[in-house]
Length: 251
Ligand code: SAH
Image (cartoon, rainbow, N blue to C red; front, side, top):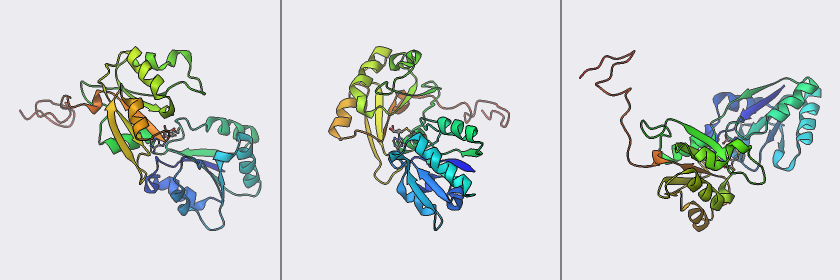
């Protein structure tokens, strides 16, 4: 059996209870050493073998899972954040299907949630934005034609950019081309929820400069939009004049 587990964004106590239990039961752990906090390995049992997938190919990862299965063992594949975002676990699951090895997935707290927490921000403020676009700037890994950053930016909603910290000059141009005014608030969140977390608030036109000045080159998320601003409407849910299923208006 293989358990794909979301490790959470960094803080070692941000893995789910289920994820921590499965980590503790694993005979083999394959973890994404470039991004997963090594402190999570403290959950492992004695004798557990640990592999860092940062140095491995898909074929090598699968070979370790296959050998563990043949020995009657359990593998935990520990992915950063939630595996469903840029996790590359689909290709592993497809290989396991071919080998007849069963697996399941335990979700994790994605770094985009960790970044909102670091900012003490709400992505979906009434009258400001009710949508969050999670995407990335095209770089060495291309992005499908219809998802060019300028097209995504044309909605003017909250955006969270993964894997784009090294491309911020291009990000600025694309966001401007998409219609964000240059003074739209933005923030760079470095290592959200890690002990060394840093938050840099700026605007869409100062993203590259802010990253340069603070020497942020990776492990950061770029958040964009007026959810970082001052203005928003109160929610209807807690408005005394608004009636809903669980509460009569009191004013
Ligand atoms: N599955 C992961 C994302 C993996 S892609 C998740 O759900 O979070 C790796 C990218 O995620 C990094 O390049 C960076 O952009 C972002 N990232 C991962 N952990 C982060 C963290 N703690 N703080 C800020 N960005 C992070």
